[in-house]
Image (cartoon, rainbow, N blue to C red; front, side):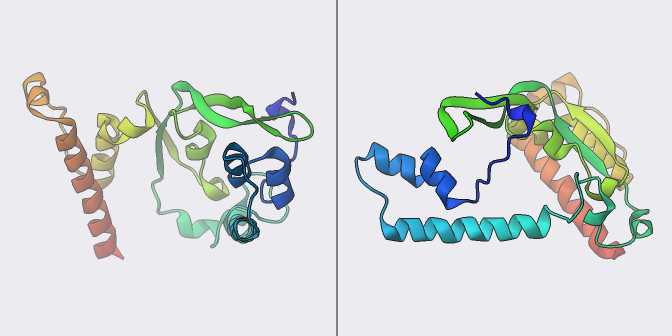
Length: 201
């Protein structure tokens, strides 16, 4: 097997790669004991082309080797100086899906996924970065992806950005509050942020 960290280049927008590695509809059709229809293949071809156009538009800049490159900024860097950027997430789970194995000829879905650090769903490098290399503050949680919005650290971050005084609930208050109550509070804070930004702009 190829080590996924060694930079093996595989074009997953290539229809032939999907055929060769029996990905998606090809795996499904094989399991059902039938062939992929011309209509299904045409649909996949168009979908892959659309995905490639989207990624080239938003995730590619000629000559850039990382998202830190200034080419990813739409405006001069000085126009972003007023921003206070906070990236909040978790890197506590080494079971986060990172990629798939490749044997030098095709992607090996039968070998299971390659894992790395993250929140159980999103890799740490995917959230702990800022396009164009803009400065940001990184705040870590020990929660899994689906529980991040209920982490008090995030509530504290949002409250700080809003200039709101936040006090950690007492043990008695915690017992009264359900996860849905925390979620409602978090959504309320985010709505407040959006409303504040709208009024400022």
